Length: 361
Image (cartoon, rainbow, N blue to C red):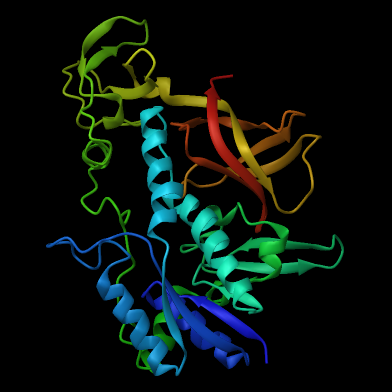
């Protein structure tokens, strides 16, 4: 009998994934990754993941399914690979997506290695995505989840061929409504549990406050500049801002102002109008390709620059230095360094990378 290690977050999706793998005949073991001490008083369980409630919910489902269940302590790895990277990105004037790093370095590195050490056949998560083997190319493909409103392929673009060969996403074939119905029918305690919304280590959403506490450094104030490079006010520190931000600037102007540029080296934040936020080209580094070995020649794709951003038609290619170049048919608003650009061919993920620059033309 084949064996599956189920990454159980305490949510309904991973719980139903475990049930579906049992129904496919797998011997299943549940595992929750302890990543962060998230037991502050007053933090509502529906706002974030990684709480004691989540562990108990996962344990309850595993017990109901008669599965062995473990909690693996990866807090040191999480601090190094996710929290440190998050802080470093903000200090560079970038806006990171820590969920991508968590998937890459924790779920599909540390937990994946644990799966191999336990001599199991596959790792299973509750992501809304699909893995398909393509006979023609001999490659494993990552495809969108069938529930387009819940598709999570964007945060999984770093998966390698080896990882895809030993990964399953059972709920990727279902809608969220169907998943909840299955959980309800099987008496799961988390059948109606809301999806987590916030970053687990910043449950109050105050990223700058977290960074100051984490580093022990107080933000340095600096100059707000207009697009001509002229000082027009004082900012609170570059970690307080992200590209496209409008609220919380504290600047009076006859027209709305937005953050258009962040320069930590000069400790400046540039403000401009909405028209100043649009760029047609971007570059990305730390590139991973899934559906092909290379992008030496330009290819037509649909490109996504943020998790909730609709895909847009574009042309993409890689230069010999490994840098991914994407040129959109139409200028895109607030392309942000530190976010991921993910390329699609229909439902299939071509690959992606971390955005490192944006150009107007």
